[in-house]
Structure formats: structure tokens, C-alpha cells
Image 1: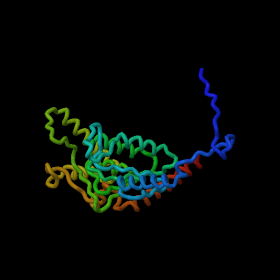
Image 2: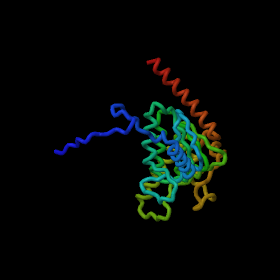
Image 3: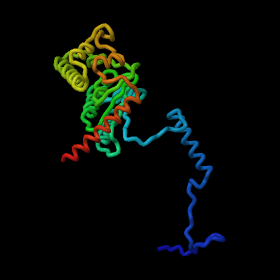
Length: 263
């Protein structure tokens, strides 16, 4: 066994018995400035801003953007919302004591039907207040997600494309495949009608309307018409959606308190 018994010699003027304070990166102003510049440059590159505003809130904002990705991975150039990312978030929001409500922001072209329905069903089954707002577009399977919230908003300039389930570029020869598509369409129909104020007759009329979209089936509905038909609850933007959500949160808390007193 080798033992190093060389004495440690302290620098002049330093008491070896006193604990020495090691310098930290914050003690070096030059390094701090460099780190700050690096953070600003990263924000500009990624977000186009020098600083990102942050605020502690009891509302969680979830975005459904681009194309809803399901079981098949889409090309990297596609802007996507991955359902395997959204589902754990919904569960975490439901369990969190710090989050009182969910604001769902949509600008989507649609996507995988089963993934979209799964997201919509999870949002609809939440006990906490939920509000959705359609900005830009809530197309295709985005419609069930928009109506899955307790209250839905849409801006006037937004549109919602309503059309039957399609398999692009495929010709189906088996009767069982047609039956599957028909049953899947019925699931979508029941969900939308059950979670909005639109009638089944009006929904199917928009769904199978001819003369507007390619393949002569389906229709595009603007913001005002979406409210008129009962598909969306109200016209409004971010401010109206947040105000409504806070109002619902207050009512939800009051209901829970009254329920606790009665028990």
C-alpha cells in the first residue's frame, strides 16, 4: 500500500485551518454576461424574442396544432400534435392541485381519427373546468376535440371543415372495411352531437353536403355559422375564453365547498 505523506503547504497569508470559499460562476461578471447573452440569443433563434413572458397561473394552456399524429409517424417537416404527448398531460392536469382549469387552443387540419377521438374523450371526461378556442382552423377530427370542452369559443375568422372519414388514395374492396369506416363515422357523429348543441340532422347535412369541397362532399363552416348551427358555443378570443374559464373555476370551487359542508 502506498501512502502519500507529503505535507500540504498553504499559500502565503492563508491559514490552512480556515475553510476556503470556492468561487462560483456568478462571482465572475464576465461569465454571467456571456451566459445571459447566450440565453438571449437562444430565445431570439427559437422564439423570435429576447425574453419570454412567464406568469404563474391556475390555468394550463394546451395547444392542438398542425396535424394530429396517430399510430403512424408523420414526416419531420410536418407540424404535428402527438397524442402520446397529450394524454399524459391530461392525466397530470386532472391530478394536479395547482391547476384549476384547462384552456385548449386549436389550430389544426385534423389527422388520425382514433387519436383525435381518444384526446376528445379524455378532455370530455375531466372533472375540472375546460374551455376550448378555435383559432385559424378546427378542421376534420379537430371538430370533436373543439366540442369536447365544457365551453367552446371560435374567432370570427376561423373555419371548421366538416367531412366524412376518408382514406386518401385507397380503393377498398372488402365489405368489412366499409362497415368499419361506417362505424367509425358513427362514433364521431355521436360524440359531436352529444357534446354540442348541433342537431344530428344538421350535422349530417353539413357532413354530406355536395358542391363545396373536393369530391363533392362536406362543407367549410365559418366562425359565425359554427355558433349559429350550435356546433360551437360562443364567438370570442383569448380574453373571453379565459374570463369564462375563471368563472367556471369559481363556480366549480363553490360547488365542491358546498358539497363538503353537506357531507
